Image 1: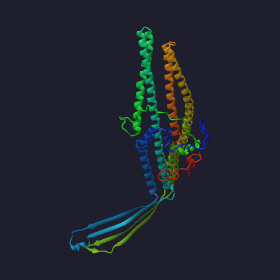
Image 2: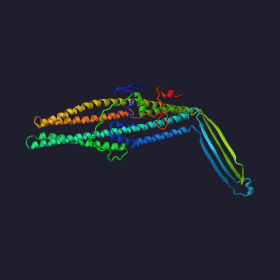
Image 3: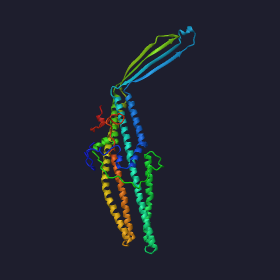
Image 4: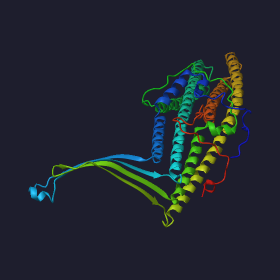
Length: 463
């Protein structure tokens, strides 16, 4: 895959490891968020199911590895026959008692490496499952962060709308008082009432967003959605801006669990291609049975005897109407499909990082501009209220200034949300704090080595 040395929308950096760790959510400096993420990672059903898939894959790898070893079994039998005929007749039809015990050994000798390829493919599947479990953790952590910031933004916007609606109702009350004194018209009264009603109409939607976000967080944490998960925080402060080093695009091949899993699947399908081609080669089977037998005839004990049976079998295909070749072509196509899926996953990963970096940089600029806008408009509102009290401007001008302050505060709140979401998305796109263990993925599984050869897997597999 052709990858450039640095991301187009990011700062040049040697490595992203210095700013990414397993608990990247702690970098936001929010104790509630950290608590929610940790609880979700221990209680979320998707993470638990991913761990179960790891267990299944490792058991499958162990089962495949067992095919390389002999199968040893123990046999034992006891039988007794009593004819009940007279003694003279028993000379021809004797009563018997047989005690027999032995050890049976069977072994398919892997001459062509097909079983070894199947074992290694199963190990690669287990590595992919382990990376998938890490990917599930990353997805859950990032989704908890996203929903948490959406919740805090909805609460903040709700407070802004309710405060301004209260201010508009106060304005309407003052105008109503002036109307009774004959100093204002009904038109002057309808405007602040209409503004207050319009703001009140936004409250149910924001409350609905708060409620639905609470239930989504509850599901992520494995809790009952009917119970409140997070208490409202009027003192919530948005996380301060900080640098996040994106590193180099090539680091994504080792940092993102989905790319590690996709690469492991490429290796698994390539190894299964080797297993499919091994079907054309001869198979060698070895079996042995050794044991001891104790025989009694008509109450006469015969000396115990030892017995053995050793066989070596050879089998090779000659004609199967193209079944093996068809299986080889099917598996080669699967290997090529896995390679294409990995290539697409790499491109999508780079795209996600580029988009996150772009959104983050632009939202930073937008946030700074909106903060200045809110500051200026609040000062303008203070002056407008002073001029209104002195009778130098009418009510319509004051209402226009109040609307502009509301619009600016809501836009700033949205920008803060988008900036926080961009940080979460960037952590997710970079793979969070995931890094493969030095000796492979958990469980002693060997790491899957990266390949720089883009030749078709079907062409690369030995014929």
